[in-house]
Image: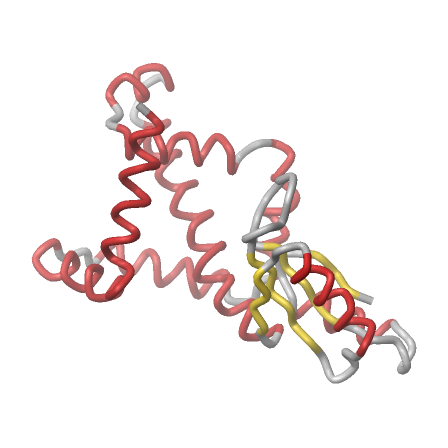
Length: 192
C-alpha cells in the first residue's frame, strides 16, 4: 500500500494502522504537478518498517521511468515540506492579497509589473486555481508545523534588514547562486 500525496506522516501512519501486519507500506510524494512524463522529476519515498520487495518494485519502476528518488522519513519530509510548500503558499497568498487590497485592478497590476512580478502574479493565479483549494487547505491543516512556519515568516517580515539580508541570502545559495540566477533570467525572458 502506497499513497501519492503531499504530506507523509498522517497518510503513512494511517496506512500502517489500518492495514494488515503483512501488508507492505510506503509513502510517496510527487514533487511536480500535471505533466506527461516523470522523466527528470523528483519523487520523495518514505519507506517504513513494513516496506519490502513490492514497494521496491514500485520505486524501481519510477526510476526506470526517469524519476529521481529522494528518501526521507515521514517526519523529515513534513518538516521540510512545511518550509518549502506551506511557506510558499503563504507568501504568494499574502503578496496577492496585498496587491488586491491596493485598489489596483489585475490589469493595472500587470501593466505596472516588471517580469519578476508578473511571474509572481502568474504563480498566484496557478496556485489559487479552484482545483487546488482542497489540496492546499489540507496541506495547511494537516502539517503540524504550519503555524510555526507562519510565525517564523511573520518574524522575518517584521525584522527585514536590507543591509545584511542580501548577503545572508547569497551565502545560503552558495554554489547554486549563479545557476539559480541563470534559470531565473531564462524564465523571465520567456515572460517577455
